[in-house]
Every structure is written in structure tokens, then in C-alpha cells.
Length: 219
Image 1 (cartoon, rainbow, N blue to C red):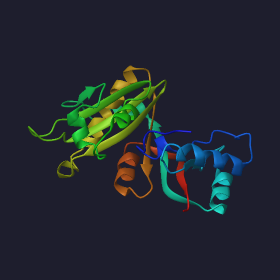
Image 2 (image 1 turned 45 degrees about the horizontal axis):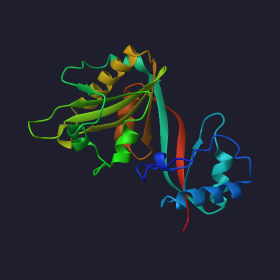
Image 3 (image 1 turned 30 degrees about the vertical axis):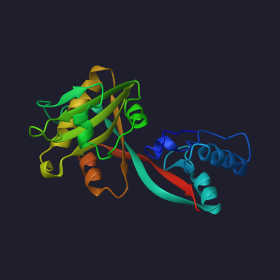
Image 4 (image 1 turned 135 degrees about the vertical axis):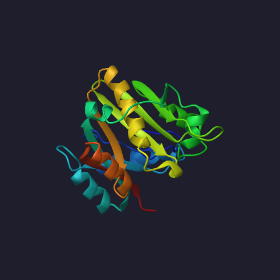
């Protein structure tokens, strides 16, 4: 059971990791109460398309009137080829998301809870390519290194600066730092309808591993 004041569905949804030990309807009642006590809608995150995933749970939720609101995929790839794709000149790395980084971040009005979520992880790095003086960065990204895995997120580029390879530069700089910390593999998440991002990541050597979905009970 995860809650973070409503900041992202992933951080405010149930992540089923096995049998709950009670019938499904009873487990869902617990979910409703737990999120209701926190003033949040009840979401369930499920995974499909890989070994040990939850097609049956998806079907049972849909039979009970839960609606799939968002679907995305988790993609994986090798870290070293990504690190070699571009030079890191001009990329700034930091341990915290400063005001400049947040000015480019798509989610505005970031709260204290959101900052805690962004900064959580075994080894967190924030990257940025400075923009013009007084303006938000031209590009940003975030990476969490945890053992042999490096997870990438929040890769965003100023719309006026797109098609210049800045997303690749940011990810390559983060990949090099992750390699220095002992990681060897990379993962990221991309929504199914984001054709531009999917093409970008496929060109970097990433491929889909499994899909995940967020279900919300129909009112």
C-alpha cells in the first residue's frame, strides 16, 4: 500500500506482490478504506506480458467494475552502449532537484512530499543542461542507481530545443555515472501513447519487458 499525497499514480497505488492471504473482495475493501482514510482514490497497479504477471487479476478487477485508466511499459537495455552514445559536455549532475531543475519538470507546484519521492532511492542523480541565462534548463533527467540496475525518469527537453540530441546527452551522462557506481543494466517507463519517446528509447537499444496498468474503481 503506497501513498504520497497524490503525487503520481505509482506512488499512490497498491502494488500486488503475491496472494493477500484473504479473498480478493476482502482485500479490495481494505484497499478502499486505507486510501479513503488518506483522502485518495483507490488505485491498483498490475503487470502483464512477462512471466509471473497478473492477467487473471486484471480480469477479476474488470469484472468488478474497475476501469483501466493508464497503461505503460517498462523497457530495459544495456547501460554501457547508452553511456557511449554522446559526450557529457555541458551536463550538470546533482544529488538534489534544485529550483532550476524543477522549473523544467513537467509537474508544476511540486510539494514537499513530491520532493521526497523524487529524491528517494539507493543513489539518486539529477541531470540538467543549462538553458539561456534566466531561463529553465534546456533538458533534464533523473536516474536512480540500485545495485546493477539504473532507472531513468523525468527526461524532458525544452520544446524549442528538441531534435538536437539533448535527451541522449542527458541520459548518456547519467549512464556514465551509473556505470561508475557499478550498474550494468538500465530500465525506464514509457506510456503506450508516447510515440516520440518510444522511438527515442528504441533507438537507444531499449526494448519492452512488460506492461503495467493502473485500475481505479468505477464510481
